[in-house]
Image (cartoon, rainbow over all chains, first blue to last red; front, side, top):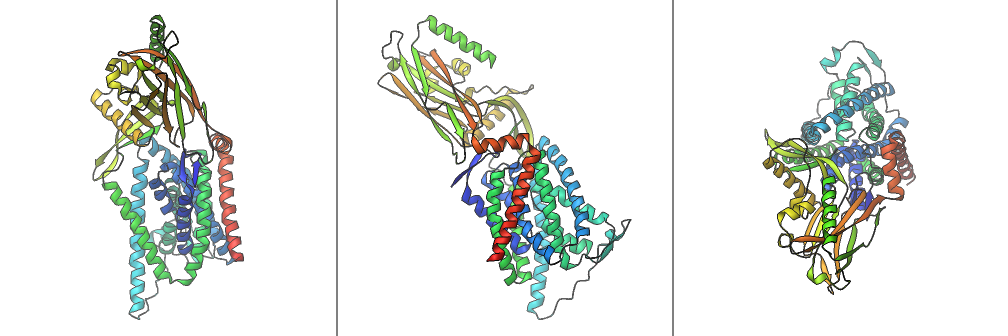
Length: 304
Length: 252
């Protein structure tokens, strides 16, 4: 099925794009991450211009996180106060990200920076997740229960001035910490077309020390709003949001997300995390190799 | 561009003076509509060539057909390995690189005309005039333009088909040029040249318009002009699709 993408200016196989959306949706449903970290590189690999890929992947993440966010909201799994601070940071971050995007684009280094960011982020997070889930699985096999992790925020967070009480998260910390975290993920969302869930969730757990019951819901809440802001920012600055591409990705991902959520209920969380870690590390290794190997195209053309 | 036109006019004048042949070119399609499902287009450039007296003449002439897309200013970047990774290093700006270029000829251009004539009419990728910006040394410029041509060729946007013009019955010629789906919109120029004894003795120009139509045009226009509402629309679409899917699956 040939579909013409009016912004990317090329014709693609619609079924491939829908399948791609379904794959990332499946991941997002199973692991509670946006799945954008797979969409953008795969789209680029398929021949979609990187800017269009990043811009359109953001709206796919919006779609995939909506139903999750609603579900968590019904269960009271969102700390709106914390979410609000994170979103505020995220919106600032997308603005900064847009400036950075333009600067890097004019320097011709946007693709390299995106690739390096992917390698660092995915490699780091994937490594951490793999380490942790392997430890948990091993502990389970030996029959000894793992000592419960002490919920604490990072010492640096405690040193920040001004303290707020976040009741649902069970925290009394400076709002600057989640604000900075929000800004950081906002920049990454703008540059990489990812929701940032796989950075946000561990950061909320291990840096902010939030209660596990509100982590996923609040992260989905933040992702929802920040990807919306990113789509707007791309529509206003790079003008690279391809609605046809986004709709095809959405068809796949919203369905995949629902199926994934069903799977997730049946599987063990440690196993799920290990699988996710393997996928994340796989993408990171592939991209790291891509940086070192001689690329297929030595020359690239940019229209002025 | 202006220089080329002037040359062309001069050539035309010279031709009429020498009582050149009559060239009657036609294109299968003067307008290509880029709509949903567009996967590229096949253009048939055909026509007749007659002697000034009106008799069959194609036997004595060779035909070269050029199809050029709208020119634009581009930057070509070159990747180089720096500290173990491949990053964009040097770059060159070209003021007018055609977004599409296809040449078809009845015989290899090298055997039809000399280099100077080929360069004047841009017959072949080797002779493409890209007008680099600023002063750069010729070796480097050559490297960049070769890189550009190679890239565009592999994307099907630059083509060179020597021997692709078929002449039948000593009067009709035809060449097929295919445009990939990634062509730019705009006005394309099709030039036909009749060549004899190393000289261009007749030429004719016709135009093809490539434009987005219907929904595709609406999308491209709004993305460019109404960024805010376009973005808002994209956001609303994504939220409602996610929400509807959630609702539907809740029913199952």
